[in-house]
Length: 476
Image (tube, rainbow, N blue to C red):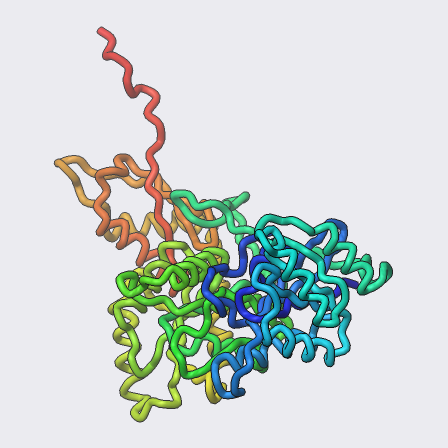
């Protein structure tokens, strides 16, 4: 059984840098600006032969409970309660501050084992700050440089001493984080047997990213789904910065939810920190299977909403729309009809997309949202045998054959499904470069209706068979 370590300290002492060093990836956003981290993030970490979970937290600030720093502090206090060991981090370069002494008292009262980490120890003059750290009464400060990886052996020894060897070397479950296959012409997973139609496996974990514009209610929606105040929320726009993953169980199905930062128009994003947040959100989309696009029902379908949806479709993820803040709508029936019409008209590339009205504040419509997610995921994983596809193609060619281009007929020989997640089809034809895009769209829409594949991107790749006589000179 593993243990949990919470990294605690005032803003800008290098907690997220230390977190990234321990997990071995640049997961948490790092910047010189104080207070970058707001939500607590948990991830599997490794320190030589020690395996544990590490919690990155927001900087401890002395502020009222109703303010944003106050709500951030509450999240940090929850992390202290969850942890088995605390890394109390101070900045050796700048020395002790009054806040360090205040928060050291909070950590001491928790009664948890503490390792005092003096970060930025590589800086000139850091020795004085490290010696000052003795005043906190939390034991010997361990000089480290999270940025450069210095002092990690000493930190490992301090962990073993604080917890004891039996607790420190307990068995830990390995992290099972899957990777998405590299993108090709047809995005998705290869099909081994094109004639097989395997049943949908509802035991596999499901990755869901929640995206949208700032202040659409993404974090509130995740909190409502999991039934606890896991993510920081409030009336302020742009609270979420890091892409935070939350593990959840819905009707026996393991689900990993990714909360992302709000995405504004590219021209409005000037600060480096916001650019990093958006890049983190885009990475979450690429690693997700289903993406819930949260739209504010009071101002739906802004230009940015459609650009986010288009990005998700181009990435090959399966989109589901959640019209949030439905409790604020006065004329729900009229607006619902209008939203359905707009959805079909503005997102023709995923005809039949699942769109659900929800209220994250009151909890209304959340079960319907998850049922739509599972339904879309089944379609995204769907597979059609080659025999069925070619019987469908015969009817299509008889009813509406491809047009002639430059006086020559285009011939379509056969179609087969090459990939799933999303469904990808290969069409063998005589001149792929001459095939009009309008006819490819016709094939895609007909296939979507014939095999009941609403609301997911469908890929069509045109191929031609090699001509064995191409390039040979005519023999006399």
